[in-house]
Length: 93
Image 1 (tube, rainbow, N blue to C red):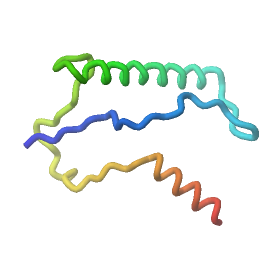
Image 2: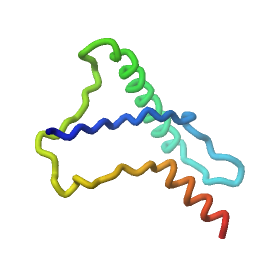
Image 3: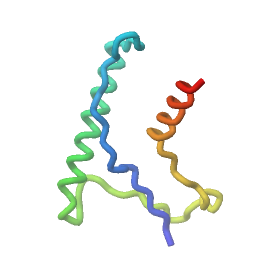
Image 4: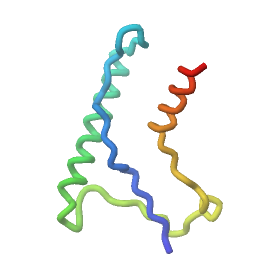
């Protein structure tokens, strides 16, 4: 049977973040890129919500016709959780 992969994971972020006191300074180009990606992702989320009741929409799910057998045991990584754990480990040392 084909393997189904959905890129959208349903988690929401707080939006684009500005650097806090004592943190890294971002260039205007970086801020513009972050804003562009954030706004584009908001459009994807809106499209996903609007197509829930219809069969066809702008967002399509990618399904591999011939899954790679070496990826059979692949487990997705929650990057947010990994970052939290690394941050907590750094605070302990």
